[in-house]
Length: 317
Ligand SMILES: [Zn+2]
Image 1: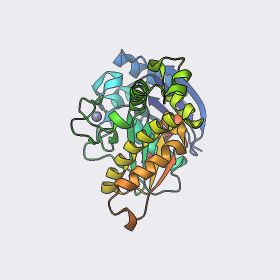
Image 2: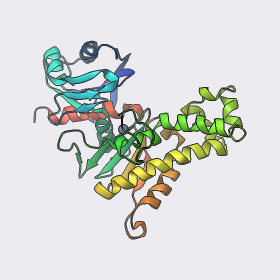
Image 3: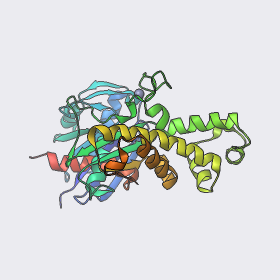
């Protein structure tokens, strides 16, 4: 059974693991991302891979990053969270490790991990949506990751939904991410709590009386206790995601959508509003098959597991 190393480089932490060919993590390491020092990030990735046996017992290394990866999968065009602009990541890591390295976008890698070993292993095609600080997306169509003409396909967080709407981290206005992310959920909930503190009473109590301290897990926990105010906040988030999914379905028609990221812990409290909103926005919804919306299965490991599998499959071909 051949193992590969997967490394997931996020804005706050870098996770690395040895993954076997059935998607099982055999050994793993995690360190904070030295986000202020782009060169040190590359060094840290190489160090983690070495510690896990790269260029020794495990020859294959895959690295996924939060950012735009170019079509040739060799460089990172842009990663705001890592302060990377045009970093030749594959070349630098191959030099450091003395072997082949595969680079992938983190949301693509997560979609691939779910497709191979998680919630999508029975599907031929799927859309994976990660709802966290932002909204990440990855598409597998007919068993292949969709990368697009320039390598940056499936950036679904930046679907334009509201002309002139809320400012997005990308600099544009009205993107799905500005309405459908965990960050947007917290912002909208705090705003609604200010407007109607009576309705939000229980949630404000949970935040020790400080509306500014309300966070995502508090909203989910409160909703799970049946709190109508918190449930409404999740439902509104789900409505935005469902609208985005209907727009994507109009173009690529996936049969399955997997929702991951912290907010997915809300389960049906988020999924049902997504399904309702998707159905409402879908054209001719009574005359076509309806896609399935489920919670992703691999959690935070999806990217690491997915990119290790991509490395195992692509190197040596
Ligand atoms: Zn945007």
